[in-house]
Length: 109
Length: 112
Image (cartoon, rainbow over all chains, first blue to last red; front, side):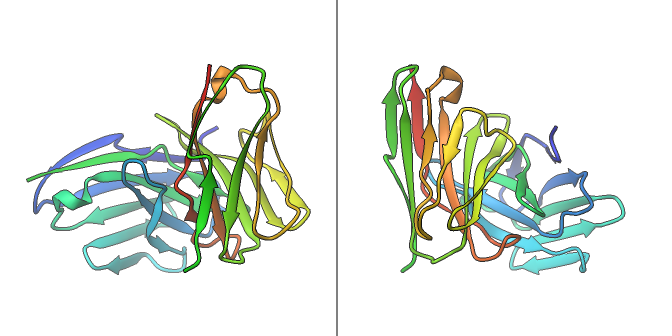
């Protein structure tokens, strides 16, 4: 069964807009929640990550919001740029890492 | 600079053949992972290892095997390739079990 559910599957945003991707998890044993960014033909690379002892983490234009009671977390990309166009994966880590299905983000100039 | 490499980058094989995909990391990480990536499924864990001689099954391990004889390498073997195993395969490593995973560039495998 899918332990990490990610939405939306695809997202189109205008340059300068806010991109929001959501994830929900089931296993309360997960204690590490990273977001990965993947460009075509490349392997995923860590973008930003959070642990459940904080509710928000910000790095530049990227912010993770974490709601432990709802078992949900989200990625916000502020001032989205065409260079942000990529596939984004959320993940949840415990004994191993489980990934969401991915969101293909397109930022239009 | 430390890195993680995969070979070959592209492979075409026939149904029933044995195939081995190589993964080599110079991070000196104890933890190594194999994933397959398919449209609509994201990354699914095949096998993982937390150290030399340690191997564990992931959520889609049927038809795959791994062995870990040293820290740097975790080869993935498809014992008898099937068309359903056509996919892009990624190897990753991490310093701690729940920590950043560093991914290789991937191997695109086609089984005809």
